Image (cartoon, rainbow, N blue to C red; front, top):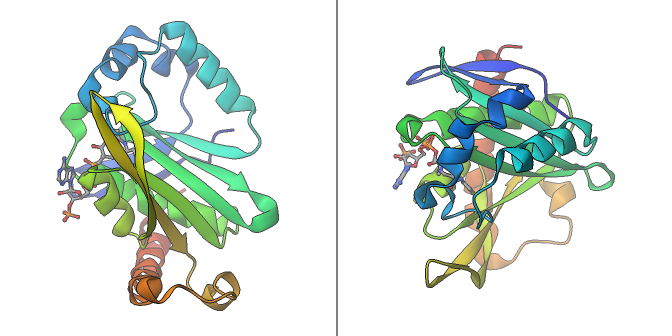
Length: 217
Ligand SMILES: CC(C)(COP(=O)(O)OP(=O)(O)OC[C@H]1O[C@@H](n2cnc3c(N)ncnc32)[C@H](O)[C@@H]1OP(=O)(O)O)[C@@H](O)C(=O)NCCC(=O)NCCS
């Protein structure tokens, strides 16, 4: 299903996360961008989707009660990307994904700022206590954008993805909701992660405070 429309001002302009129409994603423009290896090289997407693949994606998305999906827009732009939370309600957890498939919008702070709004929604609408995500190394932009709102690296799955002749590591990240550390980490935390987790939870606290003021519905 789609999430509620939200907006937040970033350094490049007004970022909007909102539902999108089937024709906005199932079109030659978007499929053309998905066929660019630079756009999908650090994602699970190995093939170039057809318009019909994107129509099916939109249909699955709009019916899937266990996920919230948004289109990403900057000012008056067309759809430039998508972001999502997959919800695991019994465990109060979620897992997230993000993709800006229009390369002309990269490195403008759109991922970092969108993550603020998505994390705000995860807390205020879904009451999630913990969120996992992952990046394929060396996707520095994706890792830094997640870390900017309080995700931290918890581990690696080595040589998980074979892309363009090279095996890439999968880097696991997690976000823990401030105030729920004792609950989520009741089993303790490996020593090597302890200071990283503490620092990240402080970052998460600041991110949520900022989001509370800046995210508009
Ligand atoms: C990776 C991606 C999400 C980054 O989005 P973005 O809006 O460009 O990221 P931001 O502008 O918020 O940048 C976040 C940080 O990463 C840095 N960064 C962004 N792209 C980078 C790159 N290619 N190399 C190094 N650093 C990069 C930024 O400078 C910024 O650093 P700062 O916090 O120190 O200022 C976007 O490029 C993308 O969608 N790529 C294709 C699909 C993809 O890889 N999705 C992620 C799957 S996990």
